[in-house]
Amino acid sequence: MKKLHPLLLSILTVTTFLQAQPKGYNYDESKVPCFDLPDPLITESGQAVKSRKDWEALRRPEIFALFQEHVYGVSPDAPCSIDYKVFDDTKTDKYHRKQIRIQLSGKGPGMDLLLFLPLKAPKPVPTFLTLNFRGNHSITNDPDVKLPESWVNNEKTIKNNRANNSTRGARANRWDVEQILSRGYGLATIYCGDIEPDHKNGRPEGIRAQFSDDYTWSAIGAWAWGLSRGLDYFEKDKDVDASKVIVMGHSRLGKTSLWAGASDQRFAITISNNSGCGGAALSRRKFGETVKRINTSFPHWFVDKYSDYNDNENACPVDQHQLAALMAPRPLYIASAEQDRWADPKGEFLSALHAAPVYELLGAGSFPAKEQPPIDKPVHGIIGYHIRTGKHDVTSFDWKAYLDFADKHLK
Ligand code: GTR
Image 1 (cartoon, rainbow, N blue to C red):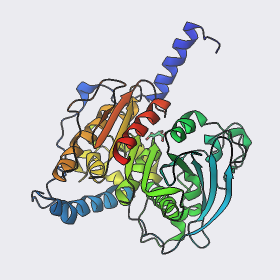
Image 2 (image 1 turned 60 degrees about the horizontal axis):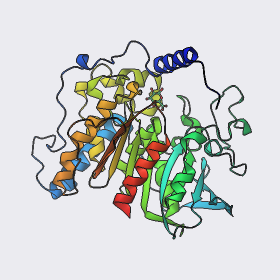
Image 3 (image 1 turned 90 degrees about the vertical axis):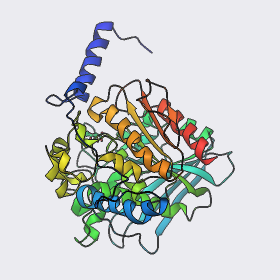
């Protein structure tokens, strides 16, 4: 690779750093306000949660309902049956590729699930299920992966919100397909826009428009619901071990993987990659992105009520460590990136730390870190965490950590 001039390199580094950290927000640890976190092991009426039974019958449903009401909304139940068509089933020299069209409701939107399976590993395989930002074709250079038919963001080479080949492989760097398959796992992905376009006026084109307004689900709620429909399909596919599906997501789609893992306890492992505000980061810290800013920029991601906590985080009956606790006793991984201060790496770590007492109560194991671990040194208990070198992204380092964690818990 051609070397960049050191001056150009430092300008580029500073520019990326500034873009990743919008001005006017707090990045100074000494300015984090004092706060009390709501205790996952004390009920709203003040009763201590002392047993698995208390957690399962009382406190878990209570916390889940609070997140529905105040943050992500109420989604419909799973449909009684699943309508799907496998339109591609091909073995190449690299992988076994399937593409499946899943109809989400009678006349509403459908989503394409792209599935890469290892050629050699014994079937059924444990599989990562993740949403993507720009279309299934963007995660790979494979010319046979179908372009999305739904709305996509306009960019230089994309007009009229319709995908074309210019973005094929555009995000391949984030998807280490080779490493994942070589470790004996499948990788499945769905374009989030197939479920609902990611913009504030996307609702009429998405799955939410097909259901009654009694469901208060947000766009994150809708995307998470779509992930569950992917899992419904895996229950029909003999190549995938539906009891070992790992829901993983990056950034806004990491917020979504957390809500999916909380809403659907069939997911065996949940992974949040750099999910930040409204994901793994504690809102009460007001470090980097705040509740007010996220509700202003992305009002469709959450329920309207979430704006009651703009500049008023302490009034929210939940904070994000309780979302993490909803995964218990199933393994949970939270990952941060050193330069991704907008997402508040420390706040992401603290969610893992404060979710741990629930895992301990359930006898599921613990989180072997009391302080944020050093850079690039993953810690793997029943909860896993790492903070790696670099920016807001998904790297091969992240995937290796997720694969090691999955091996530890699923193999
Ligand atoms: C940012 C947003 C973050 C994060 C990110 C992403 O603009 O402020 O909460 O979700 O987008 O999804 O890439």
